[in-house]
Each structure stands twice: as structure tokens, then as C-alpha cells.
Picture 1 (cartoon, rainbow, N blue to C red):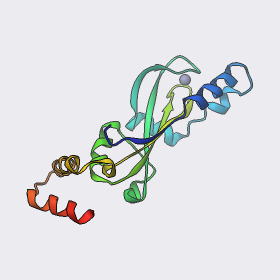
Picture 2 (tube, rainbow, N blue to C red):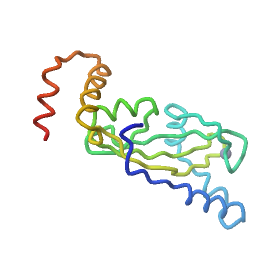
Picture 3 (cartoon, rainbow, N blue to C red):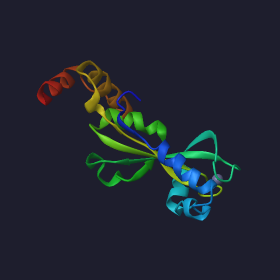
Length: 155
Ligand SMILES: [Zn+2]
């Protein structure tokens, strides 16, 4: 996604947890502890992958995207479908996304990535396109004059 920034990758932590599981230092019960909420988020909002679960190897992993940020108000902390994120990124200035991988079979779960999305990352030209997209996504029309005026005021 174009406005993606401040990416934090947790693959090293994940690898070290898996190493500890494979050499018996951590029990699988400790890492296969996805809550009912996380499992239902995976079922209803998850993004399927081709990657096999590293613990049970019976199911493919599902990615769940959680969103956080003041602008989200009551939606903060909710899981969203991946396809909804670009639309939110054109509408909101800034919000955090946490990506968690989940196995719906054995309940393995791990945070794999976090990043920031939102239109604050866009240049002035991109912002015009973003506003058009956001307006289209919201299903309403807007005169072209008002958007450039609003941009002037933000600076
Ligand atoms: Zn599994």
C-alpha cells in the first residue's frame, strides 16, 4: 500500500519462538493460544495465505489486520479485511495496523508486522486523487473546487 510507513517486522521474534518450540523449551499449548475473538476475526475478516502453519502443518495461515488510532474512535482495535485498508488510508490521516498470523486449526498465532497507514504520507497531488477516491468510496460527489481549498487550509 502506498501510504505504508514505519514498518516493524517481527519475523525474527517469530523465528526465535518457533526455534524454542521445536527444541522443546516452549510447549505448543503456550503458543497455540488464539482467543475465540482472534479465531472469529480470522474466520470473518482474515486474509488466506499459501503458507502452512509452522506448528501443526495441517492448515494454511490466515492473516488478521487489526487497526488502532484516535481517528478510528469506536472502530479502534477492530479487525478489518485487507481490501478495506486502502480505503481507510485515503480517508484517515494516520492509523496503526497490526498484522497477526493465525492457524484456525491448532490456534497458533503470532504478531508478524505492524505499520502506519493514512493520507498524511501523501503529496499534494496524491492527496487530490485520494480525496476523489475517498469521495467515490463514500458514494458521494463533490465539486472539484472545494478540495483544493481545503488543502490550502491544512498547510
Ligand atoms: Zn496450526
